[in-house]
Image (cartoon, rainbow, N blue to C red; front, side):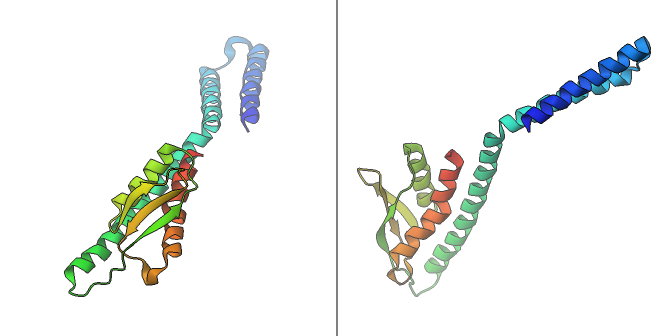
Length: 164
């Protein structure tokens, strides 16, 4: 794609020069302006394709932000309901979430997002950085595997995708 854009710029330059040679100085100013903008746009598009990875990472960061806000709102309502009602639906516990994240930054961001969500709290990372220990207020029917999978598919997958 980048080569195609560069070739289009070269072709536009050759066509403009050929018209200039054939018609002499009678070539209108609009041709030169169009050539300038054509080459500028071609250069801009090629730089856009070079930075495609960074552009996609920004999109994934926006997706993570929207997902986090949605989870924050959902968890806030659940915790508020727990506080305002006389009955308690909590089934608290500590789970070990296996980590696919590789770097300390990824682990830090993942654990911070878990801690910022009401109802969950990151406690510790194992010494070999293979598990994140999380205290959760709501473990439905004691199914720790389902909660760990939800955290992995929700936050961890999105954090890893940003740093790929």
